[in-house]
Amino acid sequence: MSADVPATLRKQVFARAGGRCEYCLLPQSASVYHHEPDHIIPIQHGGETESNNLALACMRCNRHKGPNVGSFDPETGELVTFFNPRAAKWRDHFRLDGATIRALTPQGRVSIKILRLNDSDRVEERERLIALGVYVA
Image (cartoon, helix red, strand yellow):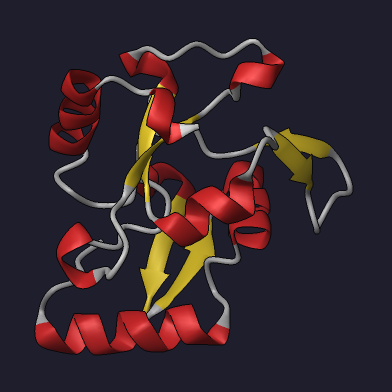
């Protein structure tokens, strides 16, 4: 839970992410809700509240991810972990196709599915932000 993250660590997570959700890349400046530290490996699964286990997440990504650490790949049916922004680069797992986020890897596919990165309202929001020059992949 993000309320358990000390203020100094929150600031560090925010700065490292450049104020953007590390999953969908939504800038904090374009969000009504505050982005929050997400435990990449949730506490209930043994994750700790430390910098290398935290990612900045927008409210939607954080709520959809919940305590999950992975899901079944829609293409292969294999159990796959989510994209981990501490262990990999966004562009190695995703690419932007217009305002739609496309997966390049199994981790990308399960992250897109569970985080609902391409729900119609999110794609429409990205279209508007891209047109304003606010959203950059």
